[in-house]
Length: 306
Ligand code: UTP
Image (cartoon, rainbow, N blue to C red; front, side):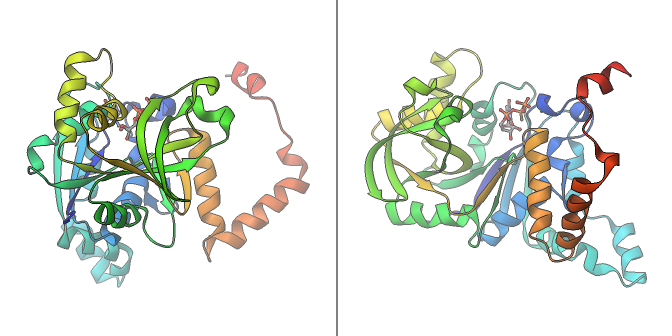
């Protein structure tokens, strides 16, 4: 099974990051010195997948510019012996293909993925990576799924255990069969269930390997559903049409950077793993603990003073 393409839906409004996202795509938020989207592309690149289909929307041209050559800047860096600063990005650019597809109306994640239909061949399997989910792991998150997809010759989605009181924020899988402690065949995905209705506490994480058949299911969901088109509904539809779908407990640390608090945690978490940043951050956090200038002031008082 050859997996050579990933679809990266990045057309969402990012309302949880307003007002920033009024003009800055949340995919460009920095995690240390790289924007979130570069972390995603690097994960795919390290998984040996080098064709990226990015679904974007109005006001998100910063993404296209970022992966374009900047000849002036490259020349300047070369003259100043600083080429190393762009080395990884230029290597990715030289050896990969980027395709951009516009989503004119934000009709949901399923709709965004469906826009890539023409880029995927019959019987082809492809990856889907959501830039809100950053995975730090020994072996790249996408590569873990590719191995399972090859082994089972089927679609596979990433999952992680979440506390049962948090299930209503996620797509939650129903297990049909335990294959190993980390691998399950699934029968159903329930989008944001109440705690009492949740079939498990295994939540879908933003990494998928999907069969091209997902596009038929997305068409079906589009025709018979109402409101936003959910990718999870299309996956359930695919299972109802006798396609096997597996869920794999992804090995690694996952940061959900779709909210400011998740993004703050990701930056601190990543900085604490980094040989240069870690001592600075540790010292800073220790200083905050002991200093009077960081006494907590309730946000309400600060906002009222604007
Ligand atoms: P979210 O549900 O997180 O929505 O989308 P969002 O718009 O990004 O953020 P909020 O909820 O308004 O704060 C999950 C993923 O699906 C993409 C998003 O870009 C994100 O990667 N998406 C969502 C699209 O590409 N198009 C859509 O119509 C909706």
